[in-house]
Image (cartoon, rainbow over all chains, first blue to last red; front, side, top):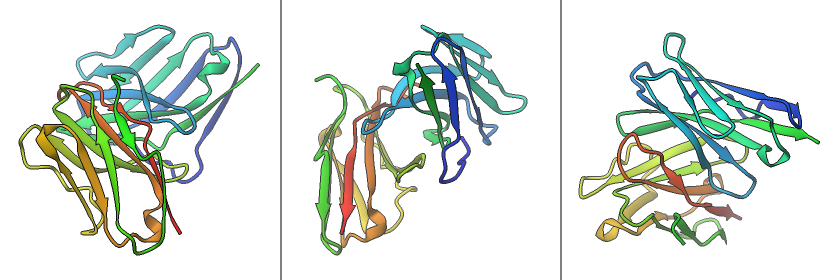
Length: 110
Length: 113
């Protein structure tokens, strides 16, 4: 992932709407990608992963899309709920190294 | 529990003191990672252990930082002569293999006065 600096970008959505969180990565050798959710005072929690031989993977209410041509990753959350409010990090792995993006704060309005 | 356990959860110490942070990985996980997270930032890689191989220390910011992993399980991260810029949350993660998700503990929040 790429660092986005000190101030986290924030996505504000209405409860029940779909959310899309985007991430760019820079290492063309990365072959494994993960999305994490981090709540205040907690460690990052694994959400979903995808390998470079795929371009889409679905989980429960979440979908990850990978575009290797433009080195872009996105996380889609369906029917966003208040419990989804957190900071979301993408990470890409090349070799044994995971590189984390700077994070996006998702705020869900009831 | 079955997750990654870190202790202490909070540590406040005076500048110049040494601190030790502990990580208990998930049982059976051969890979163990330490990261540092400053307020509002992403995660900064510090060090990586894989089985009995020599650790990858490429992320350690200075020679005041060191880590060891005993018996392929518990790890301790030591910071000597702490400085105020060392204040951060130190996170530990473990995984069963490469291309498998890393599972994180809740971190140690370190505050240097």
